[in-house]
Every structure is written in C-alpha cells, then in structure tokens.
Image 1 (cartoon, protein in one colour):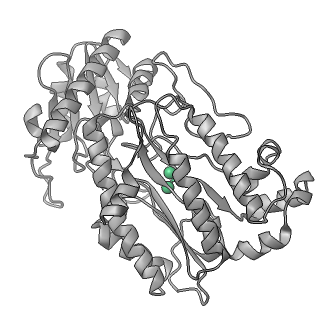
Image 2 (image 1 turned 90 degrees about the vertical axis):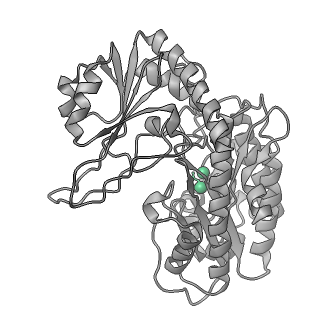
Length: 437
Ligand code: GLY
Ligand code: MN
Ligand code: MN
C-alpha cells in the first residue's frame, strides 16, 4: 500500500518542485541530508537529524552525508554515503518500496559527492552549508523564495504522508497505553518514560520531540524536560506529551490522567469533551485563528463552570484572563517536523499572516484546507509565574484563588490529537489509533 501511495507522493513533490524551480530560475536542486555535529572540544557527535527537505523524498534515517540531486527530467539521483569505515557499521544500501524511483549511487567518501553535484546546471542548494561545498559550483544556498514556496506547499499533505502519520499515531498510542499502565502501577517519571519507549520500540533520539512525562505539579511546566528517578510520595496527576516516528513523519499526542476519581478527574473529562468539539472544527475553510479564539472561549466557560474564574467567556478572553490558564496556541501544523513549517505563509510569494498580538505563541494562522494535518491541544495549567502576574493585576478579583490553590498540586491538563482536514468530516488520527489499540 505504501508503495503506490509513495509513487503518487513523489509525483506531487515533483510537480511542486518543478514549478518552484522554474519560478525561481533554477534548473536543478541539490539537497544535502546533513552530517553529525561534534560536541565542543570533544570527538563525540550529537544525534544526527536529517534535513526535513531530504526526508520529504527519502524515507530513511541513516543518511548522514548523503545528497539528493534533482532535475525536472529523469529520476532523482540519491548519492548515498556508505563510507569505508572500520569504526562504525556503514548504512546498508536501501532496497525498499521507494528505491526504484531513484538512481542510487553509493559514495565511499563524502568528497566523492563533488563530481556529481558539479555536473548540475544552475543548481540551488538546500541544507546545512559546509565550507567544503565552496567548490561545488552551486548557484544559491537556501534561496528564500524557493524555500517559501516549498514550505507553503508542505502544509498540503499527500495521502502517503497522511498514511505515515496514521502509522506514527498508532506507534505512539502503544506507548501511551504502556505509560498510563506504568503510572497506575506507581512508576516514576523515568520509569514511565522507559515504558513508553519500549512499547513504541523507539530510542530517545528517534522521537519526533523529547517526551514530556510529568507527574503532579510538573504537569504545569509546558515543556517539562526532567524525568524524576523516584516516585512521588503522593500521586495526583500524570500528563504525557509524546509522539512517535514513521518514515520521518511524527505524531504529537498528549493525555492527562487523574490518580483518583476526584474533581480534577472531572475537569479532565470536561476538557476531553471540549477538545473533541474543537477537533470537529478542523474543516476546509476554517480560519485556524478563529479555532484558537473559540478554544479560549470554551476554556473560559470551563474555568467558570469549575469555579476558577468568575467572568463570562468574552470578557475572560478579551481581558487576557483565559491566557493565564491557557498560554499557548491551540495547535500547529504537523508533519516532517513536529511544528511543521509554513504555519504563517498565506501564499507562495512570501506573504505572511502573523498571529494576533495577544496570542504570540500561536504557530498557525492559515485557512484550513484538505490535506492539512494539525494538532488540537487545549489545556488548563496552574503556572506560578503567570498566576503571580495575575495576582498583581486587575485580573486578581476575577480569579478564585482558593480554587487555584486547590488545583495547583495537579499541575495542569492538556489533551492533544492529530487531526486531518478533509473535504468533509475531519479524520482524527489519534482517536482512531486509541480506538484500535
Ligand atoms: N509536543 C510539543 C507540542 O505539543 O507542540
Ligand atoms: Mn503539539
Ligand atoms: Mn505535544
């Protein structure tokens, strides 16, 4: 199945690239996969992550030092670096469903790329630059007009890309199930993290982003990065934001659990309903900014219903009180990068729509269209630094501080799904995966 979808995907990428190259005045393109970076005063590399432009075409990870050379006619050429190296195991020459679409040339040394790249007519370069390439006769490095066009089109996913994300969700959901079980068993953040990785069959560096595994008040830290090795004495809540990879595409999923059937559990349940209501708004023609603002109104309603604030929804949003509890965007584009590119591009010429000034962390301002894959991730958090600011402002009198103190030890709630915009009903990749797992 992936085979035929990939063939279609490649045709679409070729069409987009041919138009963009012609428009920008190039006859060919060289995409460099990148290479490992060595740590300061050391000989040890950081984990290698391929250039997303390279991943769009070549769905395999072991590609450090490889190149993709493209001309509008003929097969794209993959210069696959397989160094003669007795220290490491060189990557095996790929023989998979996608390889028949490429002319694959195995390079034994990185410098062997030069002869191939120099052959290309008026060639643009996309990738991390290295001064070694000075002699490669490349026309321009990462030209902005070319990147703008390609990034704009990246939002419209092919069926192949959506299938990859479907599988990335299925993989992550195995981890989420294992993580919840570990939480119920009394595991520490560290142990839950390992249970997640094991169930997904991932190692850390393969994840699309570092997992957020937070118990109790740590759930209030939006990108909480520690993994406490010991279990807390009292368990109240668990927030896990973790994805998985398939073919270079990521999933991005958050779930929050209560330890007991208490009022925090009720708040999670209400947030879950609200989140599914928002997922239903992922439809062709919807302004994502409107979806974000509607999320604020619904969250404000929920805060009032839970006795945390005393203002009506419109006032709570206009006065910024909803942002005290929900300070991030409702979501973002998802794909080869967890926060996928092109979120502000409204055309191929570089026009942008910025996020509203009161909502600076919103990463997507486009009108939704079929093929867009977005996350929907509303949340409520009890973040001391934001609460502290609210305490010394006019907002103070609209917030029930006893309720805030009551919920603070739980940290917060986020529920996040990956949703495909179609011609009709949205497809919720995450809920479908949970239903099957
Ligand atoms: N996991 C990062 C995010 O949800 O955007
Ligand atoms: Mn996200
Ligand atoms: Mn997330």
